[in-house]
Length: 359
Image (tube, rainbow, N blue to C red; front, side, top):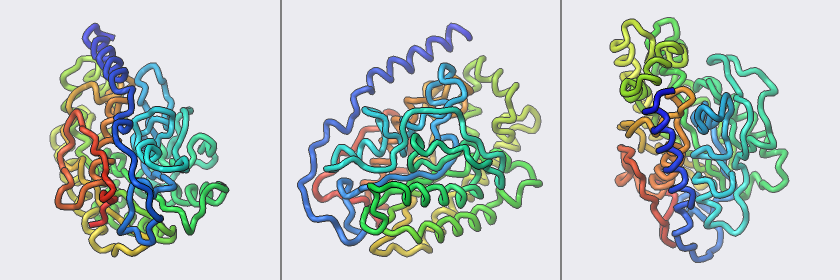
C-alpha cells in the first residue's frame, strides 16, 4: 500500500477519534407527553422499534476497511447500528427515549450474501446480532420481500416488541446492485425503472401490513461517483481495474463512460419511481412512506468516505455522516429537506415541537 494511502487511512482514524463523542449528546431531552395515536404527530422520543432493509451499505460491509476483512460491522451501520456510543440513527432515538429502542443490530460477523435478484441462500442471518437489520450484501430490490419475511419473524420472536402498540421506524436504501448491472440489456427484467417500480409497490404493500410504521425511503445516489473519486488514488484505481466485477457498469474497462452514463440515467429514473410510489401511497394514522432525498445530488467528498478494503463501500466516517444526514432530513418538512449531502453534516437537535415529518 502506498505511503499516500497510509496517510489517508491515518486521517480516517483521526477523524474517527474526533467523532467518537456522539453528537446527539449535546441535544437536550424532550418534555414528556402521552404517546401519539397518529403517525402524523410522531416525535423522536415516541419511537420504540427500528428496522432496516437494504444491501451491503446498510449491512455495513467494509466499514472497518482492510483490517475488517470480509466482515459486516452492523453494530455501526448508519441506519440501524446499536453498538454503544456509535453515531447511528438508533442511538439518536435512544438519547430521547425512556427505554432502549428495540431492533438495532450489534457487533460484526462474516458477510451475508445474496447471489442475484432471485437468490438469497437461507440460514445466513445471525438473528442475535442482526436483530431487525434485514439488509444483505449483494441484495437487489427484488430481494426485499425475503428480507421483510425475516423482519416479521424477528418481531414475532421478540417479547419486548408489541406489534400493535409500538411505533416503528424502517429505513430502506436499495438499488446500487441493480444499477451495477443497468448497462446490460440482458438484466432489464430486473434493473429497468418499470421492474424497480413493480418491486417497490410489492414491498410497500407488504409493509402496510405492519401497524404503526414510519418508512424512510432513502433516494438512491449515482454510484458512478465512486469511480470518479477512485481515479485520484493509484491503489483504488488499480483495485477497481482488477476487481471490476464488484460493480461492472462502473468499473469495467471498456465502454466505461457510456456505461456510467446509463447507470446515472437509471438512478434518476429510480428516484422518479420512489417519488411516484410515495405520492400514490396515502399517509394514514398508522403508516407513512416518506422519501428522504438527502443523497439525490450526492458528491462523495473524498477518499476518506470510502472503505480501504475495496474503495467502494462507505467507510466509518461515511456511515457516521450518513446517520446524521438521515436524522436531519427526518426532522424537516418536505419543503426543507436537503437534496445535497454535505460534509461535515451538522446534527439537528429536536425541540418539543419537532416531528418525524409526514408532509
